[in-house]
Amino acid sequence: MSAYPTDPYEAILGLRVVRKYRPEPVAAEDVAAILEAGRWTGSAKNGQDWAFLIVEDGEQQERLAKCGQFSQPLRDARLLVVPVRTPDGYEFDIGRVSQNMMLAAAARGVGSCPVTLHDEACAAAVLNLPPDHYARYALCFGYPDDEAAREQRAARSMGGRKALDELIVRNRY
Image (cartoon, rainbow, N blue to C red; front, side, top):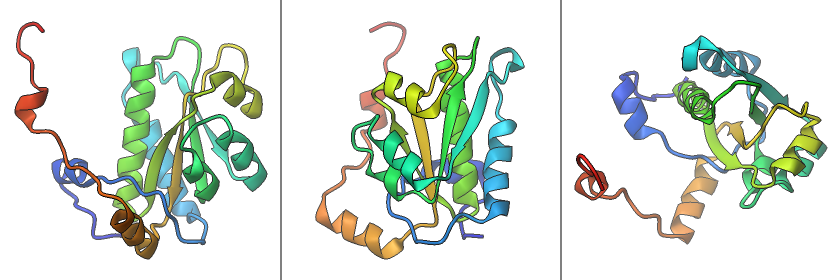
């Protein structure tokens, strides 16, 4: 386990995307905990209109990576989970379940990175989805490679967050 904050607010503020992973696979107990956090996520009318498609095969990861832009993390991940929206599901709920799995992963010392599958038809074909199921995102997981992350941060300047007063609009635009 990591020294990740146990306070939910601090965990939310501390969550960072991890794109570089160590070579070892994600332990079965960590995978189970990540998926369990997804299972317990709230959803509209408690429909739980999703499925968690796990991609473990490297060749399948490569095929899926061709369905998105900026998709190198899909190739590098030690575990991919594709939250599939099933009939009557909502995109908002897919975002909720994804964030919960990412927070649960971080609490166990597992890094994560969401990747958009820009070509949904490609993703549907690669994943062999039924016609009424949709996969727009994939979640990459692995134990962080801290050295690679330091090098990555040094190579590019990352901006901080906008000031809160730049984001707030009251009553109407």
